[in-house]
Length: 334
Ligand SMILES: NC(=O)c1ccc[n+]([C@@H]2O[C@H](COP(=O)([O-])OP(=O)(O)OC[C@H]3O[C@@H](n4cnc5c(N)ncnc54)[C@H](O)[C@@H]3O)[C@@H](O)[C@H]2O)c1
Image 1 (spheres, rainbow, N blue to C red):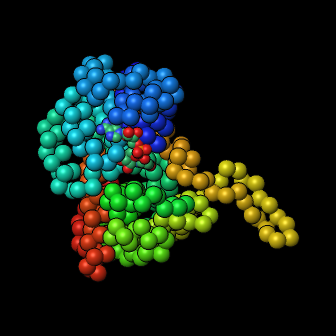
Image 2 (tube, helix red, strand yellow):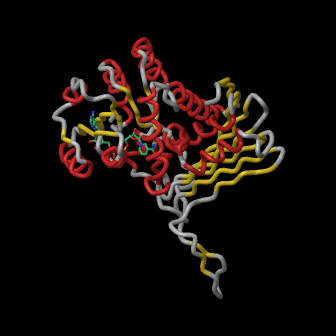
Image 3 (cartoon, protein in one colour):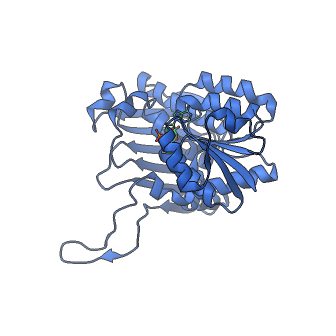
């Protein structure tokens, strides 16, 4: 049994704690949150005990692994403290919004044989995983074009927009990581953005509609399409086009029942509404993989370096938007 603690019991932390609480090879010992009510509710839902503070977790020699699901600005400090305490770490994305702080974090842990995985859960989505494997197996020949569409059902509150780090670092970062998994080495990044959804984004110098185009070292082109709103729900699709064909992953629905009538044909259920329901299987597979890698002593992936690379691409997209230039990056594929 791998013994776990969860730090941060908000939206994503509570869901992870419930997954860990049910996991046959995991013993969830502790949950901790600065908001004691959140910790208590998560403890009740997962069977863990509430830790009085972080030191209680980190000084407990029984704890093998820590899942960090606190707000982004706290990740670097908690990664460093957890690695220094000898714990394996699964940290939610992004590592931080500032690449300098990410590099300082790595400098503080790199000599400690860190076992750190970053929570890019979409790599574990069964549908996207299958596409990655089939592209990797050469089923569509040489990958020439990749299109990733990711639109949220609606904008987050203005208070969140203020601290989000901007659409590319907050939202596109998932797609940047996924694109690296498909493309291999990325060499250039260009971005366009617009304000068409909610004035709160422009008020904070952010965009709410964006397109990022990246080129890979082998000539493949990826187009990432993002919006902060979508009238029909959470729009999550991938198209991989190659010399010998195409693979497509469509949106997912609660059922596959279709309605045919006088006003519509082939109308289907709404798409799954947001990340917790759309990526439920991915979050479970992500935890399974992390448990396997810690038990086996193999390096976890997506790694800290993958987390840094996705942030570097997000920063390049921001720089392209500001300057109107195409940005050269030369980043290894994930
Ligand atoms: N992988 C994904 O799909 C995904 C989805 C949502 C959020 N996230 C990431 O997960 C992280 C948390 O996001 P969320 O939406 O769950 O936020 P949230 O605000 O719902 O939850 C954060 C929780 O952390 C607690 N907290 C704050 N500071 C703390 C500290 N120092 N120690 C312990 N607890 C502390 C808060 O009280 C809150 O309960 C963010 O980094 C976010 O980017 C990832």
